Length: 193
Image (cartoon, rainbow, N blue to C red):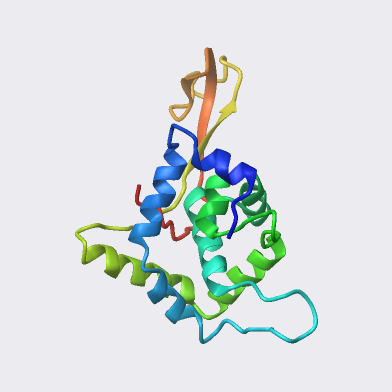
């Protein structure tokens, strides 16, 4: 298969980015064949039927893992595939010959995994494989903090400031208020770099 000019330019670059290194590690660490074997009984092939041509299971698994590792939304994952040569290379996509799977295709694939409780199976399969190599993968929850501003003279009935209110520096500016922690739903994070 002949390479495009952009692929030749990308492979000839002198510096390997952190994303390049991370995806190369991911390629080596993830037991792709085992994951495909877990999902293939549930993944239908629509070859010869109406509608869009089927996307290969290997490509969809890689797209899903990229989404989980980088915390992208479905649309963000689609955009990242078009924006990043490193991600396209990881997924085996050549935009000169084909288009990338779109956000709706990824959404349907995620729903398939969730419907059949395959996210847990994939997580455990990867974890067992990594454990055999002396590595560990954990389930995580992202916790985000934000500042809720309040006037500095806020006092309670006793004439004292609320003990939960504090000063915090955000950038170069001081704020008085309360820190709120937002905890989105727990996700399986396939990040080990």
